[in-house]
Image 1 (cartoon, one colour):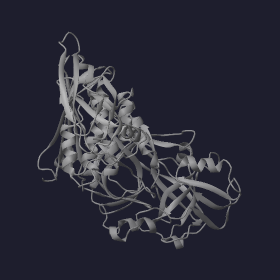
Image 2 (spheres, helix red, strand yellow):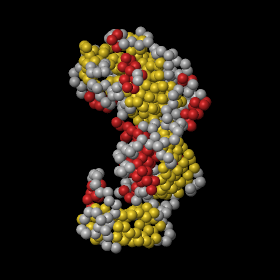
Image 3 (cartoon, helix red, strand yellow):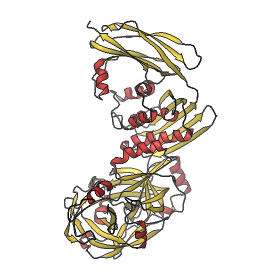
Image 4 (cartoon, one colour):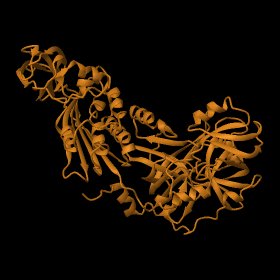
Length: 605
């Protein structure tokens, strides 16, 4: 199957929307100064955007070099930033990562790490040497994937600060860790952290944003619920000091970060001075950005802004910074959601493009779909829905389609997408094969009428069986309202190798509702997303696809004999090692409600 490019990207190319940002740039980058030539006392300037898209200067004084040792070199440049604009900002702000630092008109490095304490030293910052950042532009085989291996940096001689002489700094993984250390530091020591990156999420509903924020705690980003989305503005070419965006989701839902360009050579740019997600070789959206304001928060100021036109691809995310290429656009995974309200006749179609990285998609795809469905329905309500999920992948000869009904008394939007995390895992983390995911379509038709039936009887003909016996179970369903009760007998054979001992006959829906145990759809959805990276529990890709399309539906009555030990193991999240099916399922036209758990005994033959 040929690679699919998004309509949005094609439109940008056709209309020339990215051309202003890709105006002709010098084939050679700006002159640089090697770290060996940088000396304490040197003065210069930095570049960043404080508002809008205009690049402004701030003053810089070099205070010293901090040596981390190790290989490759991990030295950092300690400097003090000053000037009216920097003072108004409250010091180093999240989003300034990558701001280029110049001495004598030569680029020495990029603002990358900040001190996490208020007061006169809030303007102290550290810069990653440009020597190290330029390595990110080398062939991938010559790069190092991880960030600095050491966490302690020492000065050749104590550096004077208002808090006293500073002899060494400790690099912490987050601003919170650094702030906690600096509240009770050792003499001559202070903690620093990478200048946190604002992660802006717009078009995300509150519940989806909560799940996204929880999943992204492992990264040095500050998730912010944003309401600007992708803005329309006249963006200048990306150049040193320009604000730029790195987007993970783009469309009717948006998730992206804002940083600063450090260096440009032709169509190649460098930024951040530290990792974004430390993703190594990657392919993410590279966009322009507009800064609305710098918010002087109590813990750390941050840039508030909007992501703009798409301009290229971020292709490296390394320990000393990120690199990208303008005019070259990434492949995406497309999500389309179509919502129809059967009660009102209204409909809505929404969509987004998502970075197709397995480690990100298993969070981004479900949360984006949840947001789009909730927004398309535009109300929190109970009821029933017909749901169809269609998956396409380059390694699959035909679409994979799952159809089911969903029901919830108060949150039908979330109940309708409970199969999306598993669908995403099938595409991106099925363990058996890279499926080359292309897109996902979710079609939901909602009605306030409960398309449900209550399981009112489940009665086995015996509660003592032997391997090889046939078990007959009388079941009865009462459809919602004044429908006529449905009675039938379901039977299944007990396998010859079924273990003897206590067991339970489980009768209920085969779908997600069967495992809810009173949890709300929102809690179920969050639990499913948190299982990212967990194998699907099938023996082959063919079996995984068949399970997705045909099994575990809310409309099926599942009748299953299970050894008591299996229920205990599953309750403790253990692998029960039990694979022999003893039961059957029966399709119905309704969402099956109700559940029976009947004690049984399996005797030796």
